[in-house]
Image 1 (cartoon, rainbow, N blue to C red):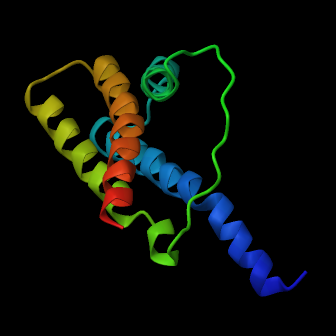
Image 2 (image 1 turned 180 degrees about the vertical axis):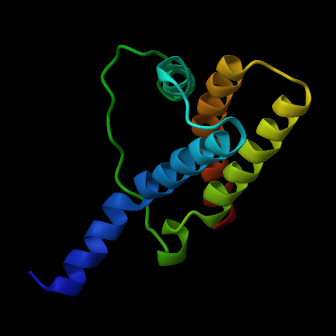
Length: 135
């Protein structure tokens, strides 16, 4: 296979997951910056928040959590749309604002980690919809 064509296929396949990875990693680092290295309960809280958000989004998208999902044909992509600058950076800005507010309001760390895990997954996916609407 042509290496350039293969590179293009790789970028298309990795696009949304790459932006999501940057969002989750960046949101976690914002938490670390404000609270230090988290313990296991904080890590589980953060991941739990992300999983709850994903479950809610899946339920909204598919009307059920335990049903077969048919993949639709992939829509035509524009190369720039794969970068997800708005969804990734917009989400990190929201994470930063939420963490700064939680610190100022002295909200306990465990609920804050849960909230940021939830927020990072939920907001990233909502901002992706906005991005795709702007194409």
